[in-house]
Amino acid sequence: MKLLLLYSHPVESSYGAALHAKTHEALVRAGHDVDDCDLYAEGFDPVLSREDRLAYHTIPDNRAKVAPYCDRLKAAEALVIVTPVWNFGFPAMLKGYFDRVWLPGVSFELVDGKVQSRLQQIRKLGAVLTYGGTPLRAFLAGDPPKKIVKRVLRAQINPFGSVKFMAHYDMNNSTPETRARFLAKVGDAMARF
Ligand SMILES: Cc1cc2nc3c(=O)[nH]c(=O)nc-3n(C[C@H](O)[C@H](O)[C@H](O)COP(=O)(O)O)c2cc1C
Image (cartoon, rainbow, N blue to C red; front, top):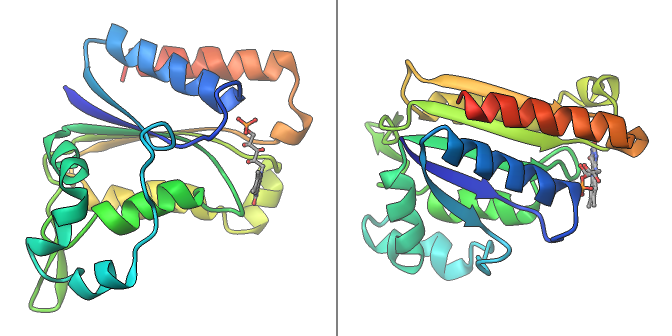
């Protein structure tokens, strides 16, 4: 499948970078045609400016400044996200990618005031997340990143599509063993994705 891999971590030596490398390698091994989008390395500008907001509903002018990113999203038949959790959300870099690229006329259209998805070609969604906090702490906070993956993004891809959510919680107390175990689990899952 043509697969868009969205990765958002600023540090090359991080555990997130190791998860990204493992995910990429396993997806290629599985035979996917992977478009590896490293948002920090590509210098993506995540700020939706005043000008962007004014043009937001004007199709197709709204995509002018991010057209290559829109094309890459529209070409994808599968989407995998690798990111840490910051303030129980996505890092501003990844949040801004959704703000600026998942535009009217690109990822959805408003028809008679109702949102209609335009990402039906995406039939598989995967997410590899790391949390500093425990599963209980995330649960008590409502675990917004998990809901964004399993509910918000899920609702925008093909209704018959599948979702694979994987997370290493409690990174604050992680050990070489827990990190190695999760890395291997991600490699196995992505090799079968
Ligand atoms: C700015 C920032 C905000 C964070 N906010 C949260 C949070 O709200 N919940 C949480 O569980 N962990 C939070 N963390 C911890 C990160 O999720 C954790 O450091 C990361 O998953 C570890 O991966 P890394 O070593 O690859 O960065 C935060 C970390 C940073 C830097």
